[in-house]
Length: 288
Image (cartoon, rainbow, N blue to C red; front, side):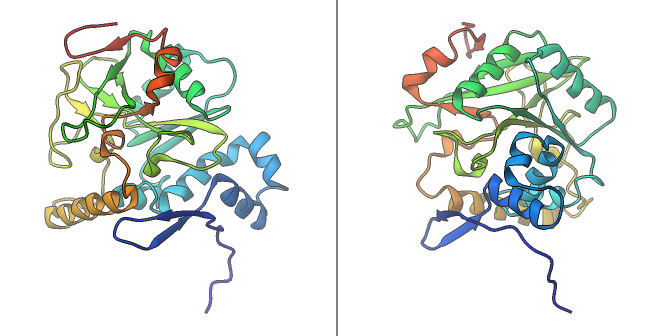
């Protein structure tokens, strides 16, 4: 039997590497879909009042593949079963409260948690969040620089790290937003929020290469999510390669320096000094 259930419109068109196009949903496309299936009265209502729907719309966005990670696509389809948590963090920003949310997710042994911060969804909001967390003893902001073969990249790449309660590992945070120069794979078009996504539990040997973070601790990141493949390393390697090639195709001519796992947000060079003026930033040899 044909499936007549409405599906989200995909109005965001991307030219991909090697020719051709891919289409993806904007936030408003997904909000309209939620209206079409009876979850709300209007897109305006969802944007302004129904923040309870936002998490599910983000999961639906992941499943379309714009994030260019086969593992994330698969896990987002089963977010509840895989304990990928979602929380909307509204009101005055409180770094202690945000830390407590991630700590609770770690205590619950969640695979991942995404924190959605309502607002303009622009560089200024992202920078304000990073600045506040950089001043908290359980977080670190680091300038992660650029790739050696991308010397022409003039944007500034900042990586946010959450440090576990026992200080035995750090977690790399991925940012989602809709501002330049956010790479396409993290560009949730028209989103009325900035999102932070991280794995609050330790890195798992064998799921991804072991990495030591800027704190000197083992680094946990989204590649360590449970992919459900068990001991099937052949399939895991295949998915990893498909993720790599898919990411390159979607980024097309965009710079890879901005789309690395260690990067949370990138900022335009001419805005960085003002936006991050009060942040505590770590470099390889110094702290500023």
